Length: 54
Image 1 (tube, rainbow, N blue to C red):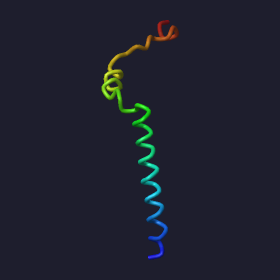
Image 2: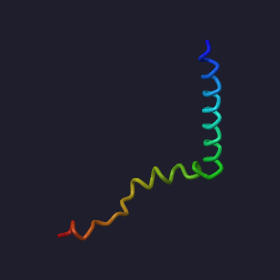
Image 3: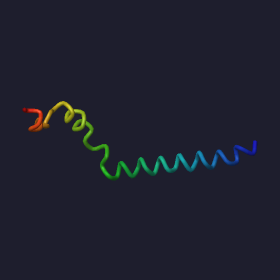
Image 4: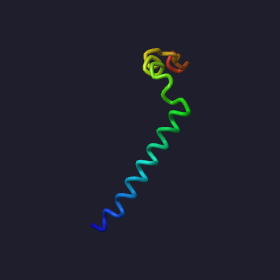
């Protein structure tokens, strides 16, 4: 039973840290362009290096 006195504040603190980080990511625009990343992977903009052409 003594363990709950340690575990409950730790779990509340971790939940609060997670909430703060999530709100920070919302404020900084991490979720604004959800379609861009999924479409960007389909296009190959890389050019082969000169050593591969020999």
